[in-house]
Image (tube, rainbow, N blue to C red):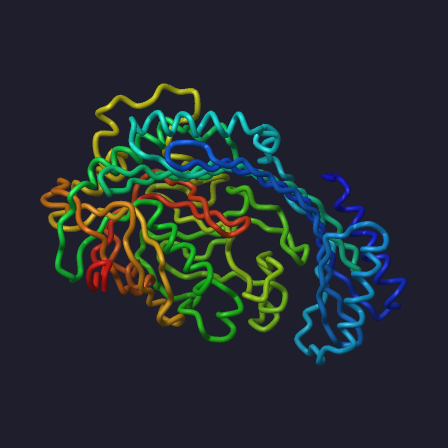
Length: 477
């Protein structure tokens, strides 16, 4: 169906004009998406699924009232029914005094990053990466997935904005188990060719071997080195609660533009051009690189047209068609020494490209095999190396205090060396405070893109060394 989305969106705009009259204003998003997933468990592929869908979303403003609707039935009757239902809903809605109006016509960047090979990937290509992952696990039990996805989307409105874009991405997430210890490796990319199952499987296996027979540690504040998977949880929560324009205008965000809220080593960007993101949002506003934090100073939050009007600014192109609020869904923590203004400034995947020789055994002999992680660990007198966080829940949205658990490997660091595995710990920590001025002791030089359970969200980060992280007990309580 790709290529017809712009025609679909235009047809709905015309139907709104003919059925709703000159007072009706329409925003229409039409998207065709295909997601393919190859899953494995017990070191064997057990499922290969693919889903393709075309969906049209309509937001309509009529006589001072706003309503929205969507449909996956996109023939003539289906589109007409969508418009009629949404018009009827608008008449029943309360007045909408905050209606921000429609996005004016504006060009969007080309989808030059769209990788045709990723969009056309077949099950054999994903299965090959799973085979390599399982082989690299060396007989240990392995599970996970390899997926590919692509989207073709269009937007049109009654003000004349009419744009089209495509995106494609791939991700692999695998876990290896040894005597009850789990090791994980994951990576996302705009190109399936950049996912190497051998490298990821070897890394996960090394972590599993190194995690056997962990010891208990008492609760307390520890210096930590967080691997990119753990840093991705910080970025996801920053996006949802901190740099969300709706929470900002409701005064439920910690963000204070103009204030030095982070360490000077921290630069955060919503880097849509550096990820597989579409080049415009659900309101048709173009998306570009947005600097949220520049050398520790908070500069902006993500806005859609409504929250921008409330804040006295302009939309940053972050409306995702959700009532949750506008969020930066391509959040990137710039690695040490990177030029954040440079195109695709994220250093790319830590792993070598597919087709290269697997690393020698010495490079995957332990959990700190990555050179960036090893360099950060070497400077820690006493602390913890943390692979991953999970089951994180917000306790206080304003200060972004979060509780959660470590996962997939924690190791004690003593005098710059890994002294042995540690049992999982529970933590309670303010995420902004963890990155506050003076609290960041080091960043890796290379960033990697991490997959997320959200649709069309990517978190890119290097490993990070922090002065303190507040652990409150073991995983049991």
